[in-house]
Every structure is written in structure tokens, then in C-alpha cells.
Image (cartoon, rainbow, N blue to C red; front, side):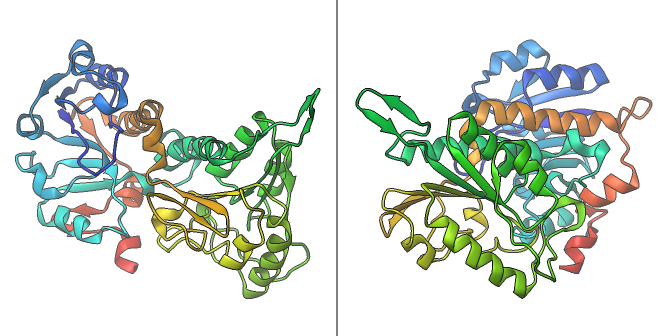
Length: 374
């Protein structure tokens, strides 16, 4: 079985889908590994390191030729994979809802597309979950980006010249990214509060030493989604949450938003009027900006100022920590493929629970139920 690792083609993508560590592990399974020249440069991995790990390093055409498995961070267009083995598996991030034409292209090319972001959130798949590993880094980086744009210090400082008050940080959306943002802001000495539509996160917030800001005694909350994801809220809850957040947000120095609903545009959490209520010099970091944004006025790839408040909308935040993000992403891919590796066939054989969840195309057709129902 030949496993190919390609250089990313998406603008601004600095990550790579395999490291010398995982190359060695794949070879130990019995596979051969080919890496496109320059694939790891932006993640601080030289071609020589791949070669030393046992991989063959070459141009794109030779890397793809005859490959039974192709690994990527962001899936390339199917047209760039000419020469791969018939029915080759492509394991990568596909953005299936946002890039449906790409998925159709994979079906037409007879490739089996495996969307790693569709990995079910079950215990045995935790080590395969790219969303969790990359979101963890996003939450950390969001706080550093906020600190960089904020014109004051984070911790309280008592000096001979007077006391500097601690920054107030509010995290909206307490998934993996939000929890890491809370922990990072706390480590930097900020006063941290957080909120989420899922009541189960209240204990998690408080366990990290932050203050939980929750709407109480409102019927119709539907925040607990399948697989641990958030889903839509009732209208009553939305109104109560908006009132609570408006009064709280006006007192904050930094707000970090992380709310996403799979397959839908990011929910709007902060309006222009709420931004106007914040103190000049405050900072908003919108981690959902590429899915439409949680913050009104946020622009993907830009830092804009509205009502004296900076709104940070960096694209592809994990890629801004390319070395660590690549190490985690590549381990997710290895953990996934190795869990299903059949030594006799020298190839992975997926089970129904995980295989059906992540498989987008097979046998020239789009087969994923979530896509077909959308």
C-alpha cells in the first residue's frame, strides 16, 4: 500500500498531513510512504527529515502515481490526483457542506473521499478527531491574538506607580476551543467568564476557575446537540441570552467567540449595538469568521475597528501554529488508519460506525447521508 502526502495548495495553508514521526509509523504497518517535495517546509519539516524517516520524496506526479491512500489537511480538487490507484482513499478535511462541488468531483473521479471533520464524537474516535485537536490550538492562539491587539496588560500588577487592573475576558462558546481559551486567559492572569447554550458546560467553566454566565429558568432550551455539538436555541432562550450578554459584554475588555453549528452558518452572537457598548480599545476575536462569523462586522482575514473596538478575524487559525497543528493532525490521521489496518490486506478496512460517518464518496457516487439530506 502506497501512502502519499501532498503539499497543500490552499492559500495560506501552512500545515502538512504527515510528519517524520507518523511516516515511520506507517512504514512499520507495512506501507510505503511518498511525500511531495516541500510539503512540510511551512511546518518546519525539511524534505531530508522525511527521507531519513524512510519516505520517498519527489514531485507531485510521482508522489500521487499509484497511491492507494492520499493524506491531506485540506482536500485538493480531484483533478490534481490523476494517476492515483482506482478507488484510492483520500483522508483529509473536505468542508463537505461548503465545497459540495469538490465532493462531486471525487465521486466522478472514482475516489473514496473520507472527511475527517465528520469523525463521530465517540470515545474510541477521540484520538482521530481533527476538529478537537485543531480547535484546541485555535483557542490558545485566539487569546494570544487578543493579547497582541489589546493595548494593556492581562494580569493585575501592583507597582510603586500604582496598580494595573486585570483584563476581563469573556469566552462565548465552550467547546474545545473555548475551554482552551479560558485556560490560556487564566494562565495569563485575566479575570475570565464564559457562556454556552449547553448547560453541561457550566461545570467545565467553573472547573477552570472562570465565572459561568448562564440564562436561568428559561424553557425551550435546545442547546444540547447530538455528539456534543451545539444546535439551535428556542426563541425565548435567544432573547434571554441576548439581554444577559448585552449587560455583561459592555464590561469586558476582550471577548472571544467560538460558536459553530455543523452544516449551518455560524450563529450571530454579537451585534453592532453590543460592540458600540464596549469600551474603546476592547478586542473581539471571532474564531467562526470563516463560517459567516459570530460578530457583526467581522471580516475574514482582517483586523477591523468598529466603534473603537478591534475585531480580529484571522483565517485558518490552526495554520498559524503550523508545526504543532501538523503534529496533532498527522497523529489523528495515523490513529484513524492504524485502528482499521488489516495486516493481511495491507490496507485499512473501515467499520460501519466510523466508515459510514466519514465516507463521502464511493463507487462513483456521493454516499454520505448527511450530504444527501442537506
